Length: 505
Image (cartoon, rainbow, N blue to C red):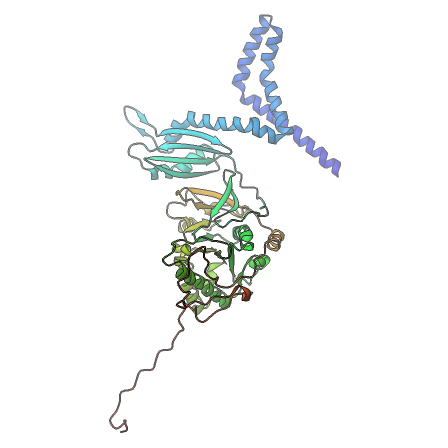
C-alpha cells in the first residue's frame, strides 16, 4: 500500500511538471517565435553552437521552471514564481485599465476625448494587488466604491477591499489568490497581552490582531460560522495575562455551560444559568462603580497593573440573556449590560458578545458596541445591520461558504473593510492552555492601588465593599451594599376617604 502511494505521488509530480512545461512554453509563444527565427538565421550563417542555444533557450527555460516547481515548490514560489506572477498582475492592470474602467462605467466619453480615471501606485505584494484610483470630474468616491466589485471581477480577483484616502482618491486592494481557505491552528500564547490579541490571519496572509483596548466587540454569525474560534482566540491569548494578574476573564454561557466549561480554569467568574448571569453582571458593574470612586479627579483612563487588572466579559449567545429569558431577567440583565457598555471602557472593563440574530429586537444595545465582526450571515440585510449601510457589496458576509468557519469581515479603524479568518481551537488545545495558564483566585472587587490613584473612600466615605486578598471567594458573591438594581416595590393601595364619625377623640 505504501509503495502504491509513493508511485502515485511520483506520477502526479511528473504529470504536473509536464503540464507546466507545455503551458509555460505556449504562453511564451512570442519569445519562442523570435528565438526560432534568430536561431535559424544563426544556423544559416554557420554559427551552429550559438544558433542551437538561441533556438532551444525558451523550451529549456520552461523545462527548468517546471522541474524546479515540481521538485521544490516553496523555493520556486519565493524566488521565481511569485515575482513573475506579481509582475504579470501589474502589467495586466496598467495595460487594460482604460478598457476595465469603461466596462465598469467609470469613463466619460465626449466628442473630443474619453476621460479615464487616473491610476497610480500599482504594487503587488504577496497575494494582493493594490492600486489607487482618482475619481474623475462628476464622480464621487461612492461611485468608485460601487464599481470595486466589478473591477475585481474583471481582474479575476477573489475579493476586494477599499479605503478612502481623501481628495478624491480611493485605494483598492485585490486578493488575487485565496489564502484563507485552509484553516490554521493557533500556537500556545507565551507573551502577556492586554491590548490586542492575535486571532488568525488577514486576507494577505499577515496576522490578524484584534484591538481590545477600551472597546466593546460584537461578533455576529450563524450557527456553525466559527464564533467559538474567536471566543477562545480572545480567552486563550489573554490567559497568560490572567495568570499573571494583569487581566481577569468573566464568562457567561447560557447554553448549559457547554462552551465555556472546556476552558473554565482560565476564567475567574463563570455563569451558566440566568440568575447567576444577572448576579455576575451586577458584580462586574460594582467593579466599575468602585473604580469610578478611585479614579475620580486622578485619571480619565484606566491603566492595568499587576493586581489591578483589566476585566473582559465574554458572553456566548447574547440573545438568550437579552431576549429569550424570562421578562424580569431580560429587563434586569439589559439594564446592567447597558450600564457596563456605556461606562466600562474608561475603567478597564470590556465586553465581547456573540450572537446569531443581529436584529434590534434581539440585541437592543447593538449600537453600544464599538466594533463589530460579521461572520457568515443569512442575508445582505444582516450584513448591513452588522457592518453598516453600503457594506453588503464590499463585505458580503452572507456569501461566505459554510466550509470556511471563522472567516468574516470587520471595519478597520480607518474605515476600510478587512477580510479575516480566525484560527481553529480544538478542545484538547483549549484544555492544554487552560491547564498551563489557570486564573489565580482573586477578590470580587479589587482594592485601590497606588499605581492608579489614591482612593477617595479611604476615610470611610466609600459605600462599595471590597474583599481582602486573603479571603478571596472562589466565585462571585453578591453583596447588598453594592446592589445597583433597586428592589421592585408593589403599588400601594389608595387610602380610603375618611367618613364622619370614623375618628375617635
